[in-house]
Length: 152
Image (cartoon, rainbow, N blue to C red; front, side, top):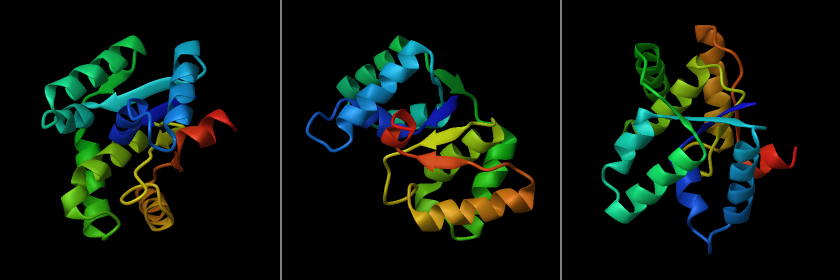
């Protein structure tokens, strides 16, 4: 299974007191076992630039430890993200989220793993991006939590 991981997944790995922390660690165990092939993109690295050095270092170590592939941004992803924003599915303020979603769909991911329930992992966004993907000829993208992947 090919899974795209957006920024909340990396953050939650280290947030012991937060909900979904245990499931996130179990999800990373599945990556380590080879059951999940994990990807992220240079977008996540850009988001990381504003993080404190200790967080940046931890997340980069996590990417290295679990051999997570980092994808370069593709022009098609930029255009698709613009469509999400233009159609009001995702706010311009959260364009990085739109880019994450676009990167995962153009690279044919089986799922997009997110714990961002305010901007990404909610019904209106899932429904909206499905409409865009059908209009543009892209396949279905399953947006889910780590628990939905590991307990399926």
